[in-house]
Length: 129
Image (cartoon, rainbow, N blue to C red):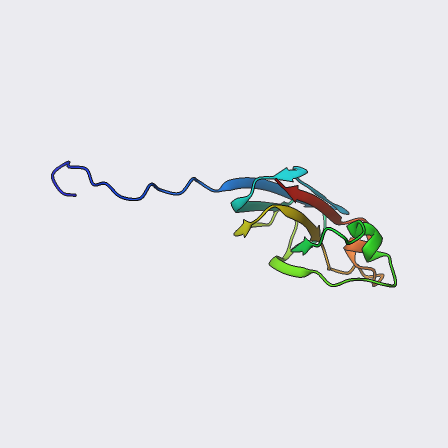
């Protein structure tokens, strides 16, 4: 309102949660519990080679992510967001709405030996509380 008056209306939503994620050979580092609702992920590649990030939703009855990745009987998971390949020192930000549940981060880039980073340990699980 012009002239210094106030207006009444619906309250503003709370600010989004913020989660810092670092990528390095061959791991993701982040908090093990993430707040629910709108969350902004700040992703930084602190490693010496390119890395990428795929955020997936994991059903409660799926075995641990690393077990799934090394299994011959894999189950599908919904992809929620992706950060494409980022060089050393590179990064990205994205926001996503997360209900309570189980989630995972996976790097699907492959090294010259043909093995994807996720199979070398670059996968992580976290819970939204």
